[in-house]
Every structure is written in structure tokens, then in C-alpha cells.
Image (cartoon, rainbow, N blue to C red; front, top):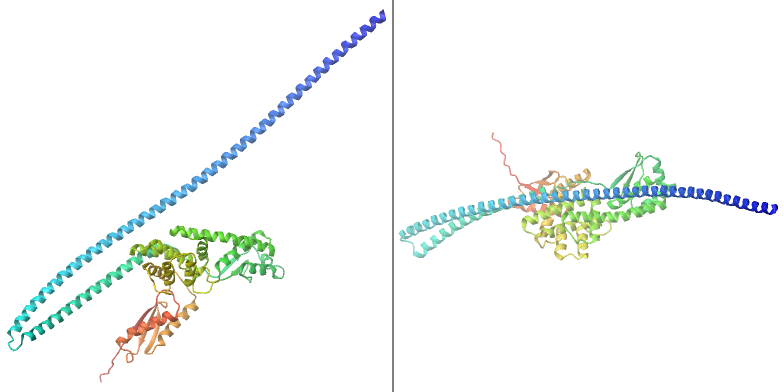
Length: 517
């Protein structure tokens, strides 16, 4: 019995002990779970805080980016508004100038009308005097008994006819002289206005370009082993590289300005990159060529937009862009094209011609110079062929050909284009030439004049813009000097190339000398 009680008590004690163990284990597990939950919550809060900070940073970056974009757009809009205001200001100035010109024209017209009225009054007075003389002549003839009526009538008519012819010749001479003075004055005013409104800078370029080098070692890398790099570069660009003793410099030589510019940009990139070998050279040159195609188009678009001509094909825009890298007698051809466009548009506006046609003709008239290194023919013929290829009218083709007198001008606009081209080419400082070429031209000018029979001496003055010829008075009379001047002028036009105009002055002097003893 005692054993049974002890056994039962042991079981109860064991159960109690197991229960206590479970309770203790449960509490420990609960504590661990709470710790784990707190850790998880803490980590979640940390992650949430990090996410929050990242979100705030992203929001700040987006806001900063939006702010910069807004400021950039605001800046561009402000620039556009400034450009618009400047254009409006220029248009107002042009309108004011045109208004002044119109007022001046009105004053000139009123003055001319008053002059004509005054001349008409003088003519009527002279006619009255003529009628009075006629009556007096009749009275004199009536007193002559020995003269028949028919004879008296004939003498009277001859007298009246001679007097009328004399008066008419005098009047015609005065009118012709006045008209000539007025036309010359008006022409000078129009040309002066056109040149003043053409505010373009003069740029003179040559056929070589110098590229600076960071050090002398780069020359050897450009040449490459056994010259393979320089040969590859020259073959790909079509430009000659001149590596001489000039310190830290290399020279690019080519008549084609576009090729020279491509070579310059490619060489500068290769020097900056440092990797110079045939494969890299080919890669860089091809990339620069593609960029140059885009740049030429952009230049053409800018010029067309500045002049106000729209709708030009892409190829014509590229040719127009190439003129930036083309010179003639030291004159930049793109600058020359701009000058011709402004002068032609001004002259067209003053003379009532088609302004838009003249602007477009000015843009196209020298396009042949952009490709005359690759295409045979004169630049005006090439320009006309290009214009015809892209569907321009016969009137446009004629204007382009006539600006260098290849054909006769068939429109007022063609004459205006030729005049504008001459003004731009002949203005002071527009063109320059070497001393050797200048001396040869002066020598040939004097030689042409001296080759004509009867010429005693010939002198080229005013930098070759005038030739003065002294003739033998015994061989050439006063009437012959005018013929001689025309012959010399035509011979100069045919045999000599020169910018602007050459004035021919012929002098005939006859002296008689005696000595009193």
C-alpha cells in the first residue's frame, strides 16, 4: 500500500515537474518570439526609413531635374522673345527708312513737276516771240516789191524751220542733261542704300590650315611606322599633310575647303584620343564626314532662313553650306552670297522687281563654286545646270547665266542680280590678291593698251582700276580717241580677268612750240 502511494506520489510529482518544465519552456519560447518580433519590426522600420529616404532623394532629383528643364525652357523662350523683339525693331527701322525714301521721292517728283511747268512757261514765251518775229518777217516781205509771194513764203518757212530746230535742239539737250543727272543721282542713291543695308563682315581664307600639336612626339605618331598613318590619313581625306620643322604644328593643304575642314577636325580628334593607327583613322574620318554632311545642311538652312527663302531641296542646302569653306580672290563665297542677296533684294524693292525671286537667285548664282573642283565648266554654267536639275524656271537659269554675261539678261531681276554681284565683288576690301598676281595684271593691262597702233604711252593707275592712254596726235584725231577707248575696253574684257571695273581714259594733246629770237 505504501508502495502504491509512493508510486502515485512520484507520478504526480513527475507530472507536476513536467508541467512546470512546459510552462518554463513556453515562457522562454514566448520571450524569444517577442524578441524576434521586435527585431523583425525594427528591421522593417529601418527598411521603411531607408525606403522613405530613397523616395525623398528620388523626389528631390526629379524636382531638381524639372526645375533645370523649366529654367532651360524659360531661357530659350526668353532668347526667342529677344530675337523676336530685335527683328521687330529692325523691321520698324526698315519701314522708317522706306518711309523717308518715299517722302524724298515725293519731294523729287514735286520738284520735277515744278521744273517742267517752268520749262513749259519758257517754251510758251519762246513760241510767242517766234510768232512775233514771224509777223515782223511777213511785214518785211510785203514791203519787198521785187519778191513774189511764193518766194517770200519759202524764205519765211526756212527761217521759222531753222529757229524751231534750234530751239528744239536746245530744249532737248537741256532735258537730256537733266534726265542724265537725275538718273545718275538716283542710281547712286539706290546703290548706296543697298550697300549700307548689307552689314556683313569680310573674311579672307587661304588653302592651308595649321593644326597645333601638344608636343613634338605627336608628329612621329601621326606619321606612323614607315609612314602608314600619314598615308592612310591623306588617302581617306584627300588632303596633304605637311610635317616640317615648324615646332608643335602640322599643316593641312588642299584646294577643297570642305575636305580641309574634315581633315582638321579628324586630326584634332585623333590627337586628343591618342590612338592613331589606320583603323582608328578610318573610323574617325568616316564619323567626321557624316557629321560634316549634317553641318553643311544646317549651315544652308540657317542662311536660307536668314535670307527668307524656303522650300530649297536638301542637296541645294548642302551646296550652299559648302560655300562657307570656299573662297574666290580671298573673298568667302558664303559671305559674298549673303551680300548679293541683301543688295539684290534692296535694289528689287527700290525698282519694283520680284524681291523673293532676287533673293533665291542670289542664293543659287554661285553654287557651282561649291563643286567646281569636281565638275568641269565655268561656275555660272555649273550653277545654272544645278538649278535646272532641281526644277528651277528658265527665268532663274537665265539670271544665273547672265550674272557673268554668259547670255543676255531677259528680265529686270537678271540685271539686278548682275549688279548686286558686281557691287559685292568690287567693294573695297572684298577681295585680295597676291603681289605677284597684281603686278602681272598691271603689266598685262598696260601691254594690251600699248599694242594698239597710235598709242604713245599707257599707264595703269589706281591699283589697276584705270588705264590712261596717251596717243600720237598726228595719227589719231579727236573722233578716233572715242573709238580707241571702246576698242581697248573690249580687248581688256576679252583678254584680262579682273575684279570690278577698269576705266579707260584716252588723252590726245597737240602742242605747237616756237622760239622768238
